[in-house]
Image (tube, rainbow, N blue to C red):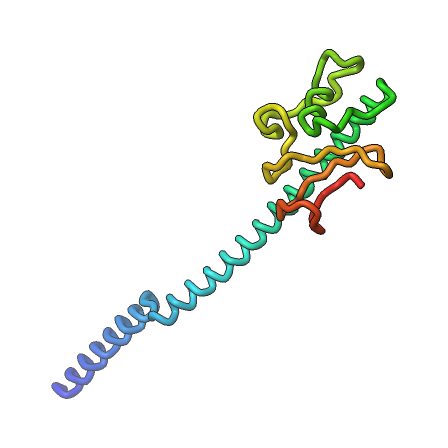
Length: 161
């Protein structure tokens, strides 16, 4: 009888120890598990950041193309009123003055947001550089942006050609 009581007590103690041990292993994490979770999170963050950068670059390119299209429309209205395009000698500043002036015959042909202008005088692209306005022999005019690399004459330039 005494032997049976001792055995039962020992079995109860073993069960308690197993429960505590099992419970502790469910909550506790090993260093390896924590490092694996951190690595997965770092990879996901890298993918999200890269995707966001590409999306911002595409949005700026689209914004530059949209501004060039808007300038083309305003220039077409100007041409319809005057029979010629603005003189490109003064470049971008002359273009802004002529298209926004209320003194011109059919104007203003376009209005600009302050964020689109450099010091209120020239139109800037999404990268902060002035658009280039030139008259050409082939086309009546050319409006261009240097594009994401901000260098003129490269493959990523955005033009109305």
